[in-house]
Length: 124
Image (cartoon, rainbow, N blue to C red; front, side):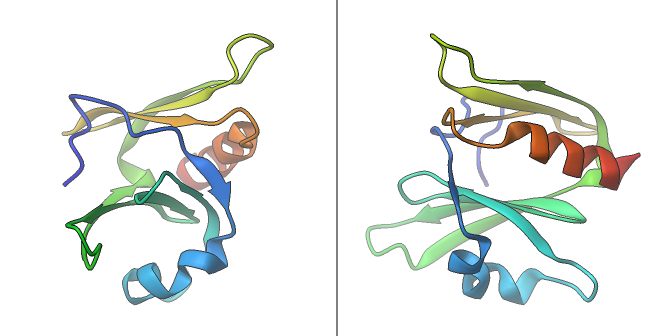
């Protein structure tokens, strides 16, 4: 499992959700849709209309993967910090009951406002 308490993920960059559909496809339930995806060097995060799926790629070959599901209905609060002129990174903090705060850090060109709208529409 990704250790959400000790450190944030590396900076996430947007990717096409279709690029990782084969990897997370077996986890997707009927009625669930991939909405956005972001990737670091090896790990990635997928936002669906029902949850966040964080994928931690492990080992030298990358065949071993840890999938962590974070359902929107367990979010108690969230915060978005957009990129600025000098601070080019954006951040998304989610507070989950029973887990605490989870932080995702995005490269400046990521649409964190769109992600916050997705989360709000799914949890409210």
